Image 1: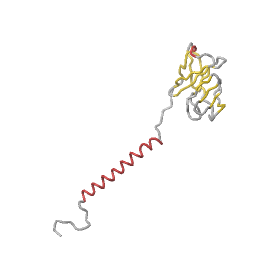
Image 2: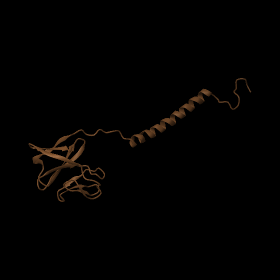
Image 3: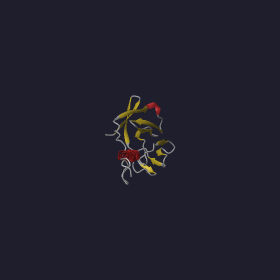
Image 4: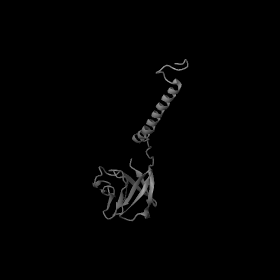
Length: 154
């Protein structure tokens, strides 16, 4: 054994070994973070502020003939405006209460229909067929001049 050689079993270079251990550990932590971060963001989505829209102009009086419907934007969500065969205006949320699909008015059935799973609502918004568990949210309708104004119920 020469005077400059190290004893058997001793680390070759302690500084180099420490650097490699730190590098491997930081690589593992970075890999775990890159996997766990998207999963965490998916499981806990960000809070979305509720729309503060109180009322909107959904259509003009001349836009809807009797027994017709129209989808309109109510804040960030769709709404549906229906003119009944008797000529009365009714408005509802256009989001199905089953799986949040957008509903539409079927004039041949005189009902609001969800195409996703064949759910049906009557012209009062009550669920009458299919899997929807509860009625549609009902909105108030007022006619101001030539505008049809839809607002949330208090």
